[in-house]
Image (cartoon, rainbow, N blue to C red; front, top):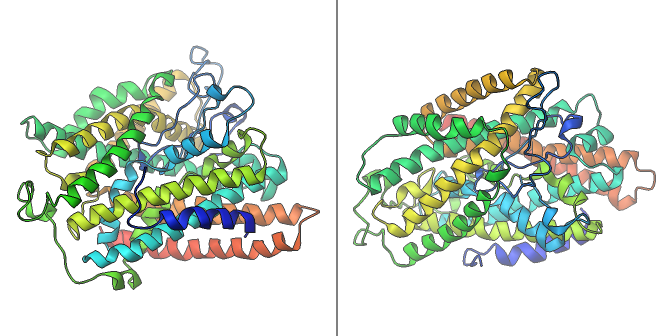
Length: 499
């Protein structure tokens, strides 16, 4: 591993990983400026970053049916983050600006599923200790993969994931990462739909309207999401990503307040509000649970949560006066902050509700809890207006893979069909944490561990002045890829078994 990057990452991430830390498709030529990141989640629903309206979100050819529409690919967590350097001028973005954008791209509503990931292997407070360690380890490996992609771009003088893959692996196989990012974005939209359904059911309950997930999700999709997804210019929606980022910080602090105040204990102010299945429940399985196969579910969820890798080329190339040491600083600092926030939310959520932690931890909080209702509102607003940005990436990725002609009519038909399919699946699946785990175990592991390692091996093989250290590092990179494969197989098995 590059020693300088490793030192930066370890010095930045280890202190922040403490559970007591406080968070202060293949791209066509028409897609070269369109590497956006799709949140969730999961990273998250809150993680669509600011987008320049001059680059990616204006469909100039919409009136000309003889020309294909410009398409753009988004990808999740989270998640995934687009970088807008328009505010920084034409010279690129500063290290600080890119750190802000990358953190915003990683940290999103997907973090709200992590307490359930801990509950998958533990039911006692001691489970937090290995959970925080796993967050730090997976976060560090994810940062390493992100750094590898930037290095490949530097070594090959490429500016997109597809070009870097073509230059280091092969052009004929560039459909592999493209397909992965397309389906990852579809998974992000699926998670959004599931979170929106749960969130709006809770919000309606606060004003005395009893409802269930099916009618709420269908109504929300037909009235809000479909019209937004049919819009031809999405630039006005990008600023809402900031609402989500601020909302996640607020949510983390609110969760700490409720935990310290014991508001959800048996004698607390909201202790008896929710159904028994959502009330705090603790057992005797603590840290030892991390050594069971069930821990693979949590690890797979983390692969989704830290997902931002398809935009690594954009972060490197838009860095002002770019050098690899500057890029390493962006990566190590951003992932260290994200590790800290993930550790805080996952720990506090699990310590509050234990084995009852829901796949969307907000569901555990009472609808009478005004502090947490503000969190629900922030997540809902961010998701509704971020959804079209992610959905367009999914739709256009599918359109590219299926080689569908990009006329206005076909795009509208594909929009309705794909949105209907996503909504239908969202109504059937019981828990968003399942989507996070399965997507992370399959697509996430490929984009985070396997693809970067293969690209780095190819880059070093073709680099005439490769050092002995770089050649030795290939073995470490391939080792991380092998670990990703093992985690993926086990995570997929456990995720499917949890249905």
